[in-house]
Amino acid sequence: MLWVIFTLLGAAGQTARNSLQRELTPRLGALGATLVRFLFGFPFALLFLAATLLWTGDALPAMNGAFAGWTLVGAFTQIGATALMLLTMERRSFVVTVAYLKTEPLLVALLGVTLLGERLTAPMAVAILIATLGVAMISVKPKALTGGGTMAVLLGLSSAALFAASAIGYRGAILALHRTDYVLPATFSLATGLTLQTVLLLLWLLLFKRQTLRAILAQWKPSLAAGFAGAAASEFWFLAFALATAASVRTLALVEVVFAQGVSKFVFKQKTTLPEAAGIALLLAGAVLIVKLTP
Image 1 (cartoon, helix red, strand yellow):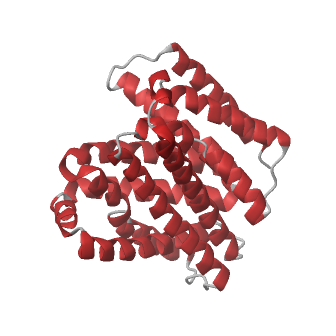
Image 2 (cartoon, rainbow, N blue to C red):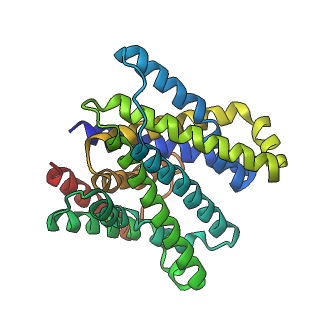
């Protein structure tokens, strides 16, 4: 059941990261605030890896072709998914695509069965559907469903598909190391993926977006906090991926929406509507079911 604890900690860390990124958005823009998660998460991922090596006394795992391939899939698709999210925000139709983004657990389940041969029973599929429906009820307002057009739908589904592929890629990378332990493979996979992403994004920023890079560097103090929260959340996600299927982890991870609702209610004093309350109940029911059904 450690995967449950790791997933809940990851969801809490992601909620904190999102909150910190929202504070950075007015100063850095949507693009700069989003890239902070990669650029400032990178050094913390290396620190996590160094601490793990000191704690376990192990050497770095030996890379192989399968690990490299899965890591490339995870890293590139995560960047692509983030880029599509930014594109929808620029088109001012992000709210419309929220429902489609939340189909990620369904896509993760399908990809897990197809690419990793993971087991998905009918009750588990029902649990995923229930949790996803709950998130849709919480996130999507009736007005949002009438706008945005076909392009918003395509962008939302494409982003969700790439996020799903990223989860499968990283889960595949961890399994490809063929280790009996789980902490070092998870931490090593995270550090490797973030190293690749950081190098690629820095090259892209230097070539095409130097002004954005300067703005990010100027906000390094608050960005460090967001980077740490993002790296810590990712570390917990990867630890969970090492112990349970990606579908189970990403379904339980939907409780992040409940955490966000809690922040809205108790920090910003926003009221919870009846559809939101019903959505929370469905999400929690689906999450409890997936925990009970996961071996």
